Length: 437
Image: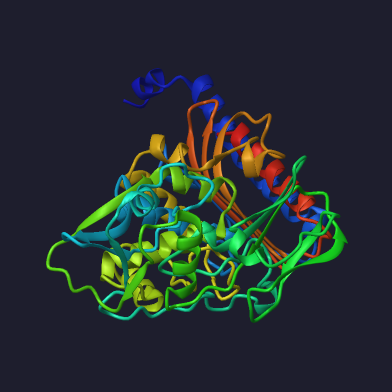
């Protein structure tokens, strides 16, 4: 019996297979060792989780159940929420109409008069109608702040921190552009009583008012964006809409939604907005996707209640509990683990499709990853994350061998003077992993 078993086994083939397994394991260990010993990561905390979807097993793990500040990897959560709850196009406004008036209830759509989107159904309606346009507040008061919990107050004039609200306009920023024709402001309402300086310099804003001014500091960029101070009364939105769209009658404002009829006006395709959000790591879009999802799930915008609801339902599969504060990752109160991100990436692929995900996530060598993953043995689709002393990258890999990997690498408390050497160390690690899978 033993003799016949020996005859049925090809020992050279088995031996080669074992050698390949051992070699692969050694290569993974060496890749991890090289990553952790990289000078750019000296003293940092590094969490690694790499999962082989094809074989349904872990490829590598290192401190993968510990907590890190994920920065803009938080946008992966918002991306899932957008794909899950916003439908094929953004449910931007609730609208009702009678013989005299058009009633509009904004639902958090960030595309309204935003220069990234030419399709403007609500703006066209306001511009063309002869009826009275009425902006309505929701019956149930919202429960969220203009800034997310834990945001830096000192960053109020920075382009990456526009305020969030139910009725956004122009992306909630003043855009200053330089061209051969001079300096241009959009919306111009904020600068109508100002004379633009002859020299193109950096612009900023007073802390507690919409007083914008040129700092006198030279700047190379030909486009600047400075967040403006929003309000909860629609007074500013009314002024901006009237100044831009010139409706036939002054915009009216109404508390509550008192119409028995009404329908949802969809605006831009959801995935087109999510793609911009993920490719350029747009904090404003991420926050508004987060708030719009709350409106769709709860019927109101309440960030804390929404987080609590989602963690108990759609995100109840996380291996570790998570601390979740906002939609963009600007808050340092966000804490998550590499294993949680791998679990989320797996759920995204199961709930939607890798084809749709690849159309939304940034690809290696392009957009936010243009400096990395240009010559790798396969394809990489991922989301970056950056805050002071924090670097993150989570996403999908398809190797040249056809192996599908999910990964998350979170780096906390590095003291490298720039993120570039940290990201290059992560790139070298993932490239090594791709070569042996």
